[in-house]
Length: 393
Figure: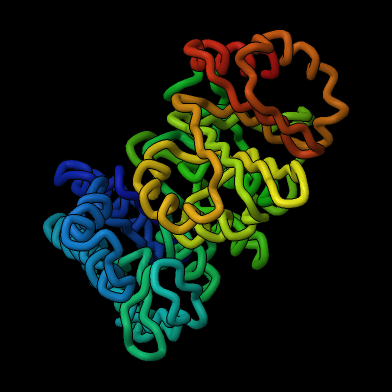
């Protein structure tokens, strides 16, 4: 008998037909005699809608109440999937986080798992139940609902696989696995059949759509191999393991982001740490940070970030830092290209990459052992991205 933990993301359960399809896939494993623990996310778009509703009432919703609200999404999915399984003759039992004793710290919005009591899990499995668990959520020692951060269902699945010593952990999504680049943007993106924890962690740091980086770090720490594959196709997917010899390339993959802006400010004080703390406090990722001391009392800082994030925070940012700012300007509609790998400084094609991307289009670049990054303003972003990918792979 094999014990399997499966996780299905929001796009996998986005509508009733998709939920039926997931139920049939679970049944295929179940009728083979496997023990099944299934983790599900909120349906695609639900979490964003709930956040939007909260922000219509308050620009800064109370974090505790926001967690109570966001847990609704996963509760809906576990119930619907359990109903779908029951309808096709599979005995299923839904479980919210508090019902399996998934305890977390008190930090709302980004709680860390402290313990999984596993209330009745072994008993339910022995009774041939498929256990459907709400991902993303936990309960603090004070009895408050908490959430594990965006993509937290991945963490739920890996933590359950570790706690209940699963033989396999399978992460299902809407693509066939991890690619050398986003297959929705890069025409010749190649599936990576096997990747190690460290490399996947680097890729996810630059592209959060791949997987929550906290989840990968947890898998790496506890050596939990898992697969990432497509819910709706029978592809082998990508195996994530401790070590691999599958690739010899200097570059493992290419990630990209669009709709970025570069803000530049001249200030009458050294405020860079306060600025970074401001964005960190709003869970906004920044990059291409430049800090320069102009004279005894004047400093110049540059930071790139998502354009929408900046527009949402612009008024608050200006209000807090107005006493220090001598000037503030931004450059919009920028894109970022990141090449992630190992020993990239020795990569023989670096000069050719600089030849592909026109020098006038490069606003900033960062070059290190594990990556080569460009902030560009070209309207030909997609074609440049494809050209760089084709050169490397």
